[in-house]
Image (tube, rainbow, N blue to C red; front, side, top):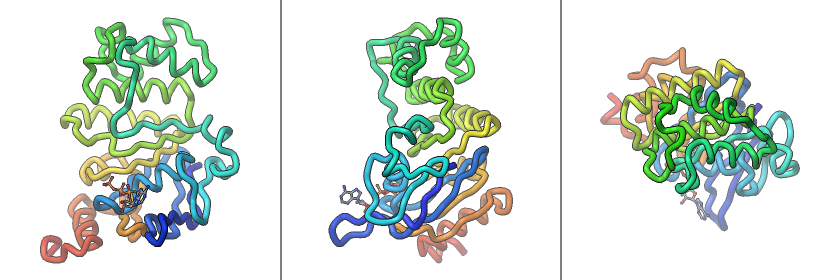
Length: 238
Ligand SMILES: Nc1ncnc2c1ncn2[C@@H]1O[C@H](COP(=O)(O)OP(=O)(O)OP(=O)(O)O)[C@@H](O)[C@H]1O
């Protein structure tokens, strides 16, 4: 569903991403780990078609994002680190507006049903989103993704700054989408949450995918050691 084939991104002489190949199938959650500047956001931005690769390609459902940008975007939902909603509109109005952009005209009960699925507390449905916490905004983002019936979900550090309960709730929502066959690619610094929710985990360094794991094959301490080893924090990883 989400595939990158030897994708490379250069900025002048600097290689931000170096021949990265990965594959996320329907019903899989792939977490990309790596230090600041490892190339996680660059990978996400290439899959989204926000930037073009220097070489290699990103594919959604077998179609090149670069060559079929508009078509592939229909299958993708994206939740950035800080999801922007229209602050003067309510959660319902934001959902109505964004699903409308996607070509859908949903009825009031359908919009409410989507927000219920997203886990947003009902008393917030008709409140303006200007006072929403990050966790609440993300729930509206998930509702938008469900409304779009996106087959691929791209997330850039979605749990950073969330309290443990909100982070846990977010993880549970991702599990539900996974059950619906959504393929999720997520950049994160949160090893614990990655181990909790991922089916697959990749560790990046300096634009390269250094290690990949099936999440069920590795414990959290093993993952932490692999991460620190990859970063060359040998002393800490002992
Ligand atoms: N437009 C750009 N011009 C030049 N260099 C860039 C540009 N965008 C990103 N980079 C560089 O590419 C590298 C990878 O950046 P990227 O944002 O993908 O890292 P990251 O793993 O997402 O980091 P973080 O965890 O801090 O978000 C970094 O060294 C960054 O400075």
